[in-house]
Length: 422
Ligand code: EPZ
Image (cartoon, rainbow, N blue to C red; front, top):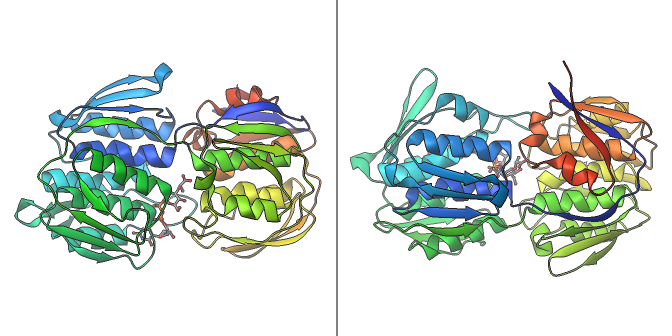
């Protein structure tokens, strides 16, 4: 078992490069199933979730050559022959459901076990199944798995109105529509930057997608699309998290290779809270700031990203005054705050979606357990500002989303190390 040990109190210096976005890579990789030629992905983060997705593709029959030192992978999807996804891998990777879209679009059939939820919420897939149904796919339930089959072996274009905005639901239905017969319209679609870039890359291979990045997306089905070369865009969640790290440790650090506009409402909120930031074309520099409590409600893009809520909640424990954090998207994403309270934070839970934070409070090192990747990285940040030593276990959750995180933080002057605990 591995843990992270963090000694608090260091001021940080220097710059940290943002990696390729996990939540983009987990979409462009399944999209390759649609393609009839070889592909190359660059700036790929080699984190646990990506390794699982590559293993899923290889298990289906794709030929994969990875070069981790170059952050590159070359994939030939033309050899894909299986339509049943590996059960053990699906259970490890919630976002494996995304593969069902391109698999149905290309092969007219896919078998998989339920991808399961995680601690931040039940993570249902009703909108996926309803969406596939609209395309004319039928579900056959088995003991531990389900099979989706397109009527007459081919998806037909559909008009789908999402009852709730769903990011991977939108991306999955876009991919299902690419090779479907006829026209598809997606309404109340998510507008995350990753969706716009996915559509841009698919269109460069011959797909016909209009309106990505707006609430209404139109896709004209085509017979086939080619392969290509795609660069993973910078991870806006990493960028936002590292900016909060600079503010929390009252350090001047520069977060490099990011796209500030992809942070949406996070920057205006931080400025409203008194953050002293220098925003460049592809970087953000933090400066010492006197923070005042500022309430937020998470919201789909361009609102305040739910994945950046946990580090922001920690930041509010160091701001003057009382703030309300309304986690409007997931029902289980605030429970990590009870572990911050064991460190000395003053956070009261009103209901699973809302906490009241009073600050500033002194934090003291504790032994913590990382419930999910975003709460996990927040615990590392808490350890950086706490007095004494903080030990964080279950760090597979952190490795799922942050590549070589301890090495990258050590370069800034963070006293963190990965230790094996027998
Ligand atoms: C994506 O998850 C991200 N994951 C999440 O990041 C992110 O938090 C989330 O979008 C919101 O921005 C990836 O992109 C791989 P949703 P997704 O479908 O698409 C409900 C991280 O930490 N819902 O937008 O699964 C759902 O329960 C992860 O990197 C249904 O009810 O989220 C939630 O309440 C965590 N039925 C809401 O919709 C469905 O069929 C929004 O979820 C699907 C979703």
